[in-house]
Amino acid sequence: MNSLALINEFLGQPPNASSHGYQIDHILEFCHWFMGALFIGWSTFFIFVLIRFRKRRQPAADYHGVRGPISTHLEFSVVLIEAVLLLGFAIPLWAKRVNQFPPGNEALLVHVVAQQFSFNYHLPGPDGQFGRRDVSFVSNSNPLGLDPSDPAGKDDIVTTGELHVPVNRPVIAELSSKDVIHDYFVPAMRIAGDAIPGSLIPIWFTPLKTGTYEVICAQLCGLGHYGMKGTLVVDTPQDYEAWLKERAELAGGAQPASSPGAPLQPQPQNKPPQPAGKPEQQPAQPAQSPGQL
Ligand code: CUA
Image 1 (cartoon, helix red, strand yellow):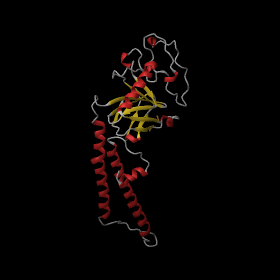
Image 2: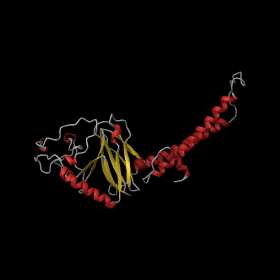
Image 3: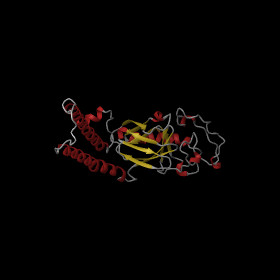
């Protein structure tokens, strides 16, 4: 952290915890200082003009205005600095973020499925394969609509509100939504992306520091928008494995059905918390047979 970074801190930005975040912070720092300098410059000029051209001193209007080259030079410099910022820094950084994804075998892939009003996470489980999802299977106990007949989905891990990831490994989060537009925003990771129904939008980041970070929804998505606040926990690899194991054990009991036609066992302790404001539905009927859906 250098002294330039003070302005980000002053404006309430949490410390960066991701590998690309420093580049974003540098652009933000520069923009804030540059805009601060412009603000002071224009304000001073405005006050100077108010005094210098007051009616008492300048009773008749001057129809020619400024004749010297200073204002042209000043304005050209401002445009030049802004062009360098945009073309030299912002666009290349953005292009790197959207074009240079880490290779799939190196990164951790997680599906983030937004809904009113929570973020659901879908992990592939020990087999590394995501189970098929279909909206017709969505229920209170199956928020993502995992297909109970797909063997790849048997060991899948589904959590709501909290996601764990290992430190120093790229994470690709594939964003989607079940209802309206949300925005998955992790300020400490300097990453955000809209979750749009009907679209799959990947974003990625590499967490550098273990810890617990805030996840928020950055699109006003309804009355419970504020309640979408969640957590991202960056673990050491050992802690992450322990968490995966724990979630896999829970998932083993929470899957819709282990054999086709078997009655659904309600698992209240594994049910995701019902967000406030959402009408409480009846718990899944035990007699419901997945084979009939
Ligand atoms: Cu989801 Cu705001």
